[in-house]
Image (cartoon, rainbow, N blue to C red; front, side, top):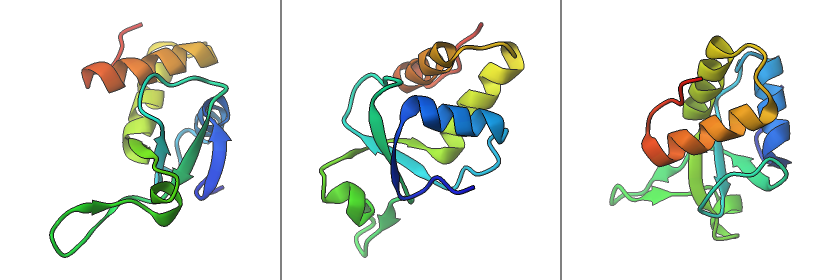
Length: 111
């Protein structure tokens, strides 16, 4: 199931990724900068492309709203899988904490 090209609450993205064991990571997450929140909606869209000057060009749906790149699907999946491996009974908030930790530290949160 592709989640691309939708606005979704973070908690719903997490639920889908957990249930599918991160089967589809071909997407990026865009939103406003800062801490991630479970009830906040984020745009799930494609990867940025490079223009002729090697500048990143965000997908039109993200660029038109002035959204920032937050996560690649691959990074997002890596964080989710790390939490599942360490804490199989993890709550949604555990995943959010781990995602925020990774954004801040570029390192996985230990449980």
